Image 1 (cartoon, rainbow, N blue to C red):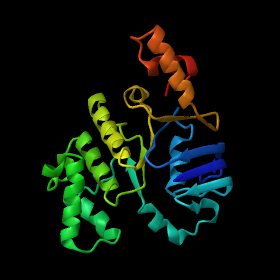
Image 2 (image 1 turned 90 degrees about the vertical axis):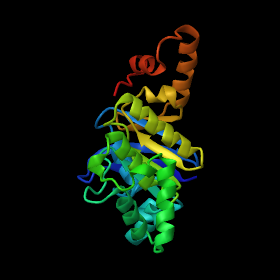
Image 3 (image 1 turned 180 degrees about the vertical axis):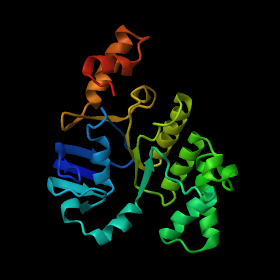
Length: 253
């Protein structure tokens, strides 16, 4: 198991309790959505997964075989190298080309040979269908193209987990679907995907495990969602599952 949270309390840096008694589990190759209203704790949960926030209160809080309450800061850089992190605002270096953005990450994580760096850059850009853009600057790319580069950056070191915070938040619906399809393909290689989203419609097109943040709780609602999907397919086949679910279960986000 890549992530194993049992009875975890999660606080903001100011000490305010955001989520309590969290049970959350991630295995290799799983595709996991975290949904909920703004301020419900989605991004705060993710910050604990990539060690931006400490976890001090937990029955168990394991990430990549390390117990978070006992984790020493010196081990965090090595653990982050086993992760890919994707943000809504891309966070590409604006004064560097695509190639230079990716080379910066590789060099920072211990890659030294120029030919190996160049080969790996070409590989990941091919994976995200952006090889022809490697000499462009971020401002020369569309939002969807920048997000593809952010995904390429995330998979450079062949991570065990990709953590994505609203990766489609700034994208049009068609581009958003293309990005999620790309992440879905990556998950099929064994990399787990954990992503927050407000776009509930994505759950119809790209099924996965669904957790919801609500009232300081994190609940696995996958089985409820799937059962409702079966009911809607049988009784209201023209109604999008996500829209019915949002109406019936207060999932509008």
